[in-house]
Image 1 (cartoon, rainbow, N blue to C red):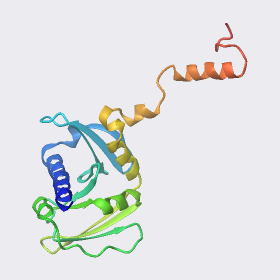
Image 2 (image 1 turned 180 degrees about the vertical axis):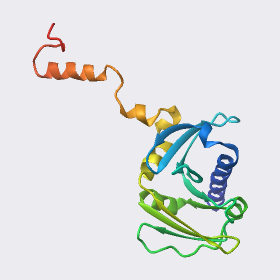
Image 3 (image 1 turned 135 degrees about the vertical axis):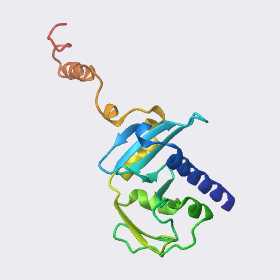
Image 4 (image 1 turned 90 degrees about the vertical axis):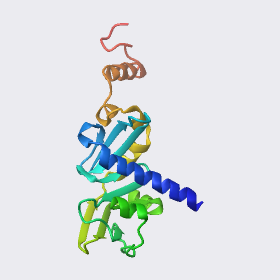
Length: 195
């Protein structure tokens, strides 16, 4: 069980490394956007696998995929320890035992139970102690995170359909609804009054 978790964790981290180092957010297909989140879709050029991920407020150093959330500290002092607080709950204990991978990629990664807590939270506060003993604070408004996660894990990611077109009816749909309403009301069967 533990080795499966470690493998799963490593794959998630490698995914984020690839996204941060080899992708340009500007060149990817944005399929959903809210005030706080933008969801992007890309096709991996080596595997043809569809990948979707979200960034927080146009900050590519803060990303989420289907099962993990990451705050990159690359170029910002790295990570020595981290404390996180969800909503107005008591802050978690400072985590000083980072994985080798977290140290290597210089990022805070939230997975597993804490990731589930994140998806239902409205606010995340993170205090990061850097390798230079500086303290970096992040205070994130998580409004819309569950919707962004639903897009990442849903059919919209696979299809690449944009949110704006997914919610609006296509041409002709309104007319068909008008015809149905006319039929249900016992009136003429067509909108123009002719049979």
